Amino acid sequence: MDIDDASKRILLWFKGKKLPPQMVQIYPTNACNLKCIFCVQTLGIYDLNDVVPKKRWFQIVNEICEMGTREILISGGGEPLLTPQITLGIMRISKRYNLKGRIITNGTLWSKKLIKETIRLSWDHVIFSLDAPDSKTHDYLRGANGTFEKVIKNIKLFNEIKSKLNLEFP
Image 1 (tube, one colour):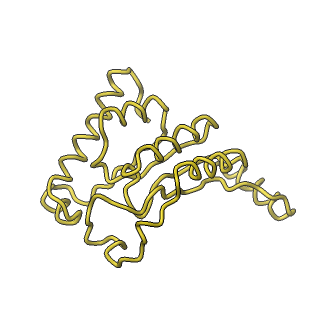
Image 2 (tube, one colour):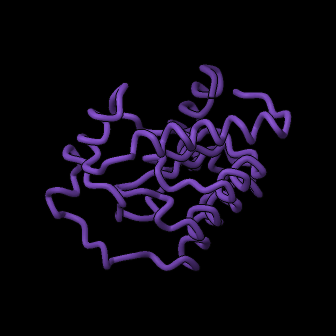
C-alpha cells in the first residue's frame, strides 16, 4: 500500500466508513515439530488440543477474503505445515480471491509436493526462519539436530523447482 492509498483509507476511516483490514494474520496451529529454546511454547500456555476444525478455517478465510482484505499471513505459535491440508486450503482460497500471500515457516516440513503446490498457486512470499549462520548454533536454538540442513535443502528445492518452471524470483 502506498502513502496515497493509506491516506485515503485513514480519511475514510475518520469519516466513519467501515473498512476491511489490509492484512490478516492466521495461526492454523500452535503445535510445532521443534523445541526452540526461545519459544513461548516452553511456557506451556497453549492448549494444543484446542483446535479449529478445517471446515471452520475455510469458512473464516472465505469471510476474510469476501470483506476485501488484501493480504494474508500464515504463521503461528507453531509450524503451519503441521496442518498441511488446512494451510494449503487457506492458501488456495486466498489465491482464488487474488490476495497477496505470505507464510512464515521453520522450513523443516516442506516436501517436493508441497513446494510445487505453493509455486503453482503463485504464493507471494515463503519466509524461512533461520536463527544462525551455521548448523551447530541453529540446531541448538531449535532444539533438534539436522534442522539447519533441512531448511537449506528446502530453500534450494524451491529455487530448483522455480528454475525448472522458468519462473522469476521476486
